[in-house]
Length: 74
Image 1 (cartoon, rainbow, N blue to C red):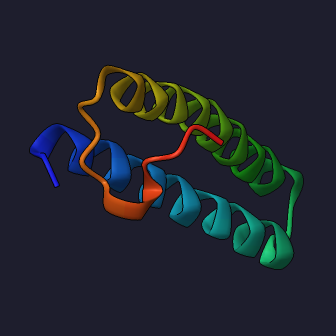
Image 2: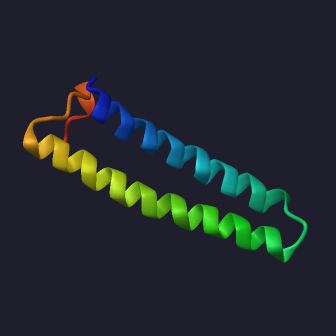
């Protein structure tokens, strides 16, 4: 996998970690401040995911994506 493609893939993996953290943090939080924090993390993760998916699709369209089986425009 090209370095630029790997960076996009790592970004998408980070998004999943952020979403898991937000879910966990929300489940164990004890006050509203933490709820706000985990909502911001979740919202940020979705924004990052949207940007990363757009870049991935752009790389696929340009023929740059070297991600193996993931090279679909679903």
